[in-house]
Image 1 (cartoon, helix red, strand yellow):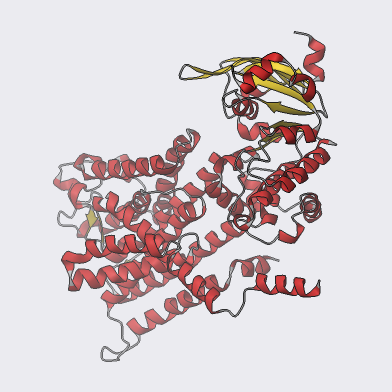
Image 2 (tube, rainbow over the protein chains, first blue to last red; image 1 turned 120 degrees about the vertical axis):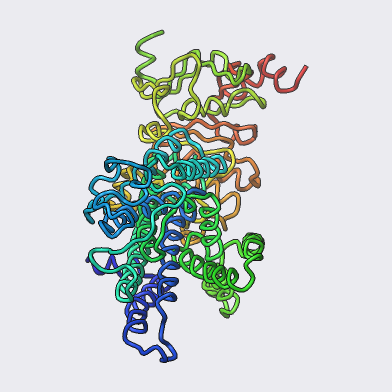
Length: 380
Length: 251
């Protein structure tokens, strides 16, 4: 029964995505750890970290696709939830540094010693304990999304107005986290991490493990997403996207549905951020910048919104392009990104996956509906 | 106000007033509808027909007046979802169906069932779900189109699908706003037939411009003008009244 429900979640695309990710989770660590440096497929650690980063972005894209692609909530502030999850992980990693910091203070992170603080602020309590930090990875973005969504969705703020206030939310957090007296490292953020769960963050083995965990987390995100969108709950989300007031008039409390999916999506984004931070080695307020959130929307649009797998694909492809561009033609990346967004909006409204669907339909000899109808006429 | 009328009528509006930025959309509208009754509401543009529907379904709160449903439910205190759960279904002027769902899923979503997020996420569908969907598709002549996307239906079919969604809600009262706007003559007659069929076991309020269609329905008519009731009675009687002629034909 349970396995049948699980299998029903895997349409062809989700199955391909899961298979690719599972193989990557196994192969990438092997290529990094067990192949000699001169082996043609050997993966240097920096490549593994880069791929791991793409996977975290892909989780963020899946989270965003759930609210935007299925429920029509265009959040331009999802980067905030990603960053909050990242900060929660960063705080755990800071507490693991202990006496190895520049000032060798066993409790206080370096920046607090530098600011002449005497005691650990309440916000930092408990972050040396991994389970608590992980709980905060979910709760910090979850509670913010719940509070924000409760107010916004009850007041029936929709469309472009909602998008604007999500931008304002992430911008406000950007400004707040820039301040030294917030106690989150200000401008510099949190960095110089040493250990995660007792393993050296920089070691190849840890990098391989973090990559595999990210791949598995992306699989889980896709499966949770598929579970939601294939249930009746998911049909209601699409109904809200298509005709919100009709949904209300047939008796659904639209605000509750929006709040549920928005909060869940924010928690998913938080997990993405938490996996991102140990792989890139730093978290700072720039993650809150409105441009980051907008970039995430572009990934989803490029891959195909309302497809989950497409969102993940879009995140990986656009970020791959970004890596290449910022290496080869750094000045032109933002132009390329802007152009990409315009082209996708004009010519690929359903993204890459929509294009694949379109080509499949054209190459198919005759559509199924056509056959049935012709058959029916012939029979008559 | 008479206590007995209040409890025996299905819908009871008294002295309802609504204004938007000083514009008085409804001024002292009073209307009662008996259980099982079908009523046609006519009136020129701006007479307050749509605002009246908004008030009944909880989209707009009246500034003054009382709105009771089933004799004891004060509709002015409830939101759209709660009013829908009480058993009032509404059809919009422009067909509004869920375009990226199939015809069948449109009905499924409207079908009377628990509406909470938890129920739709973890709950199991009722055993007679498929059967109820089949029956509604048959009534609305959409059985052959069940697997099509609602977006691909013709205008008339979308109107019927929306009426089917209302039936699926199994409401006590149906509010239908201009159901035949933009329909061909044949579709109009079929819609009148469909509504008469529905009226056999539901109370229905139909707002309409099309006089032929109202005549086809053959029910009591209420004429609205400037946010209040101008005349009420059989169509032939009200259309003979001088003030109705004046409102419709102008001075």
